[in-house]
Length: 468
Image 1 (cartoon, helix red, strand yellow):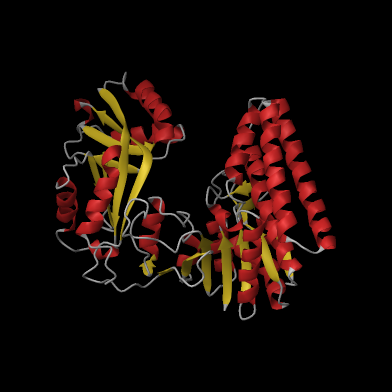
Image 2: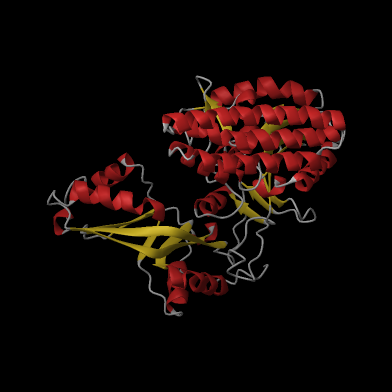
């Protein structure tokens, strides 16, 4: 089989874990063709973001402190994951060259006091470039023929939407095949940075947080892989967050569409857009635990038999969100009111997660990320309150969103009634409801303090702990 392996940040967080990852790749490469995609170590991406923001404000001392932390982390891991002296020396020199490049970029940001989306992507690319180098070195240390590539090197071509770049798949497929097929044919293992691509001018771009998943499925689609395996620190996609529901269990098989719904609502182990490249080619994706090799995780595939006894597959909880209500009698029958609201938010870089509108048309409710609340409210008030169209813009930030997900809900009567009866039985008030015509999910909003109790009530109602 031809398999694309993606290893997440926790899987490569330290020298011992990198050695473990190298051994996994080595063992599977005895019988299969492997393409390895590597994320940044641990919380390195968060540190790079913090460092870039501090550089923009000219805080050179803080930048140097974070830089030293990143440098020490990678050099310590290098010392552990590679034993051969000459190889260790060679990899260390390459790591130091990359670190010097990062330092020059940061000093430039400090001098200019400016951090553009383009330069931020450049800074964030260093996490994967460093970690992938260490995994490549660790593979060579145990005698595995492997070659190091960045996403740019292998031909992942994107648009220029820095921070959330989208791959241009026709060009990408052609270049990836041209560059990696010869490597695979000769029996070598490509070790590729996750998260990173380049636009048509060759400028580094990133695919969004969690974008290493996306890299893996892009490569899987381009190379006609048999499966893509996303290695992480959980056994697979689960019926609920096990920190909230102790009886939550791993899902054996789910459909692409169910997985997308779960990813959008924050399920650990999946980038929301990661399944797009593989869906057309019907390439299965498997979510596995790097630290539990006996568990084969969750298989995500096209055709999943719907079990009438299992109409709901999972319950997801999204925190750090806020609810905005826009009301006004003049909105009734007003052409383009919703379009105007959405255009204002889009212009100000605010993404809408949920939408609900009353049939009277006198109010629209939306859910957004909490860190976007001030920007959203200010832009709506400035643009709408004086127009005579909107009377009031109110908001709540002590809420959470819950999604009930399952393809078996489609066409099954009474699911919504069971959902809200279970929540009401715990004395929990629902503030907003949204459901798409696909009937794959029902989403609603409750107070943040009621979120955990609502999740447990729904998990019990649909008997998700039972492995039917």
